[in-house]
Length: 209
Image 1 (spheres, rainbow, N blue to C red):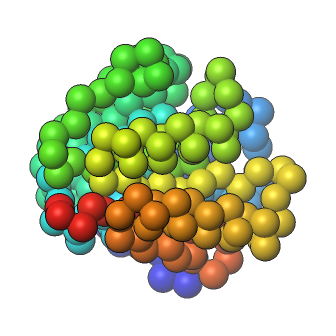
Image 2 (spheres, rainbow, N blue to C red):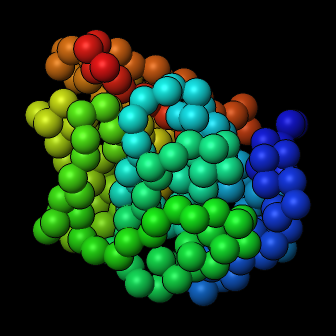
């Protein structure tokens, strides 16, 4: 497999992987296999790389975790990129990854459901496996998708793969998001990110953007 993570972060990937492993361990997720963590980062990198090709306005990543898509965008010379998460502990890890990567991406800490970030006309809202203390992941995704449809924001989302999901049910959930976006007048790209994992990205853009 071609590791885009190691190519885009050519001089920093080992440091980023070390911080990521420490971050996951702090939340009780431990693995002896480096590939497990590398694949998680690879998803965000490939997602960010695809978004960098769109030529839209700015990018705002919500529920950013370690902000891998945002930092990938920054490494690929995209301007006006910011990341937001509600958890100050996660934000502190994201800042460490940002500093290791040599990026200047703004990383903010607040609850986007209480204080919605302001987006400009052609900006894109990014949500990679978004989560919340207040609701389950699927509900977060529905709210993000509906927010973008109502406000006419471009949206890029990687839905979470839930414990109750199968590959088939996950794909169908992604297809349902696609149908809803298309019904609202968006163009949609719905594709699997890599062969080894079931995750898909949905990139919904306005016809007039």
